[in-house]
Every structure is written in C-alpha cells, then in structure tokens.
Length: 166
Image 1 (cartoon, rainbow, N blue to C red):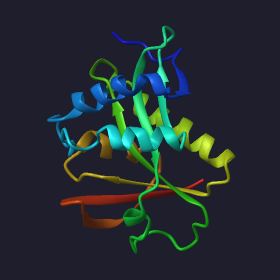
Image 2 (tube, rainbow, N blue to C red):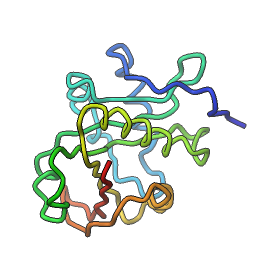
Image 3 (cartoon, rainbow, N blue to C red):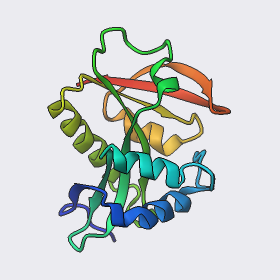
Image 4 (cartoon, rainbow, N blue to C red):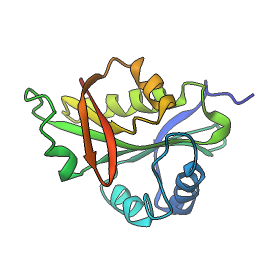
C-alpha cells in the first residue's frame, strides 16, 4: 500500500511539465472528471508555472504524487455567488492525485498545504468549482468545512461552488 506520511509539499518545477500533463491525462475518464485532452493542457501548465502557482506533493524520492493549482480565472471570479466579505480570494483548481495514492487523504493535504501558503500571502478566502458528478471530491472536500455557494453553468459544464474563509 502507498504511504503518504513523509511526503513533501513543493512547487512544481519547469522541467516537470510532461509529468504534470501525464498526470492530468491519467485522470481523463475517471468518475466525475470533466477533463479532456484539450483541458488541462500545456497552456494551463505554462500559465501556472509562470505565476508560480502549481504545487505538488512528492514522495521521498521526489516523485509527484498529486497536484493542485491556484488559478486566476476571471469568469470564475465574477460569479455572483461568492461571499462579498472576501477581499483577497484565490481559486483552487486542477487537483489531481495519481491512482495509487487516491483515497489516502492526499487531496486534503494538498488543499490544506496550499491554503496555508495562500494565507501567508494575504489571501483571506479560497474557492473552488467541482463537478456535481465527482462524488469522491465532494466527499473529500466536505471534511474541510467549505461552504456551498450554489451552482453554475460554465465552460459547457455544471459546477457546484464552494468557498472557505481563511
């Protein structure tokens, strides 16, 4: 069985682009996943790397086990459902955990580690969109006390919106 206790939270390196893309592609077709070979692709990876907003959890040998991005999507930011109290929000996006490390709490650890970094950067609220069909993600995130803010149709998909004050 896979271990997650000694894993390291880190930024993804420029040299790891192809690894990131392979992890994203490995999620296609899994229950609740809305991704395709067109999204996410090299464009999202390049943007995340340029903004230094692509994080990962690595094992002790340096292998990437899971990924999370802090996105800057104006369409998401403009949605009317978000709390008006948020002054410096950030959007969590593109969370992926490789198959052998799923269901071990790694997704929650990625989210918690990212929220800690964001809070240090002055972010006061985190947000994310999740597909209503992604039961695993919904179950995992429920344990983190995010507040449901409604649903929307964006990018040809229906999404549930969640938010948490830091």
